[in-house]
Image 1: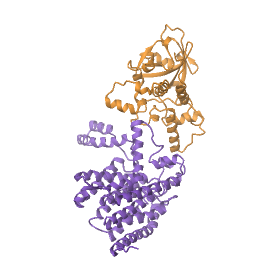
Image 2: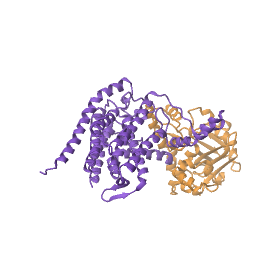
Image 3: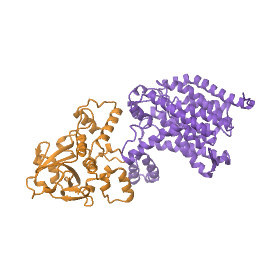
Image 4: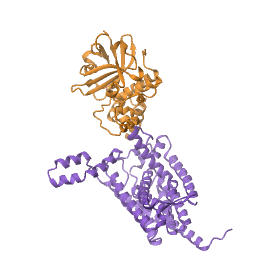
Length: 377
Length: 251
């Protein structure tokens, strides 16, 4: 049997230990959070949620959302006390918390707020022309580009509801992506201005890394957000993804990042335990946007951008199914899928929720294994 | 001479007349002037095929938590109209003539249609053909030619341009069968007497009493009524231009 050097054994032990600590910590937090979510009735309501009409989904009404906050708190607290490292962990945690705040606002507004008013481009222009106050007229003209920006989202099916609107979400996610890009471009060093391509080597992209990072953070956060639509689906797929990231970051010698990934995987184990059908609580945007951002930035921090499509395969497939559905509607006037994201398409085709989730898990695990294999080269 | 439409085109009409939903029921008329939806699904902008309309109805029923399996034609009509599902006259004509074109081995109808639009608009129109082939487009000389009453065939269409009190409405009716001196047609339309829910795809006849006289001086019959009780005829009376036309592809 091969004898590994003690420092390797030490680092592996530490990574696994922190994963275990995360399971226990989140287990301790869970009853408190659950009680508060039930007490404050931060629960899923039937309004503006067509998926609840799918057979068997009605029982999800009144299930608390924001359960993902358990994972977010566990990751933030454990990292702060046991894995705080200026170079590799404080920005990922910052970006994750930014995503969590955005998600939390959306979740809370979705439950408690009234329907928000939304001024269309036509209304803005009319006000700019006819408002009795000259200053207000100037202001409305000033806001016309913003109204055009909003109108673009409406064209693609964004329906203004109670929570954060799609265009507002995108702007805040853009800010999270910009922070990530600033960190990677300016703080991590020249090596991160090149993309590592497995089997090939580094390709220098220079400042183009900035839009790439922003795009990947925004897209991945939304992909995880979109996937979080069935009991246990997103949680069960994030566990193998973050476990794989822990392995790959450890192999790259980034122990702090490996511990962060192990903590995330550990806390997700507890979360998913309570999230499988019938769910005690659901992740909510607070968890999905935070974990999506964290997944993207952790992968980028270890310069494994090229592996991300495999490690996040099913999340991306879910996101693309929504893009394809919207594209099909706008360009062709047809539904490509019975319902998007694609997990609902399979449900409407007759798969049970359990069957859909487990098959998605297995497909995802297969791609994660492929991603690890590629990432090790 | 084609006395009747091809079985494929007749099947499309039959599917519109009896949707595969619940106990069946005709497809309601969709007024494309009221529903100004940009980038919408064909089924909700009055341009859907019968299958698209049925699929969309099933999805909407699911969202509303109701079942259409046992819906009577009346219940179905209420559901479809309230959900904004239906077909307008040009959407109906497009899908019927498209089926006829394919049955005649002429390929897709759209490949024979000239649009007179910019390149970008033409590319976009290719993606959504049914939404871009209006009565006006089909009635252009580049796409169809006027035929005399005596020469009318199944697969021709009756083009009604500039009807209504303000002469801004266009309408199209597809000729489905020529039986002696009787022209059978099918179209999607709403009569004021149909009320909110009883309109949609329907059939009618024009009996040619004198071939020398214009179309409006023949006997129009629909839903068992003729003359000024027949609103299709009344509407046609107000048109600036009414003619039987044949697609150039079918000539």
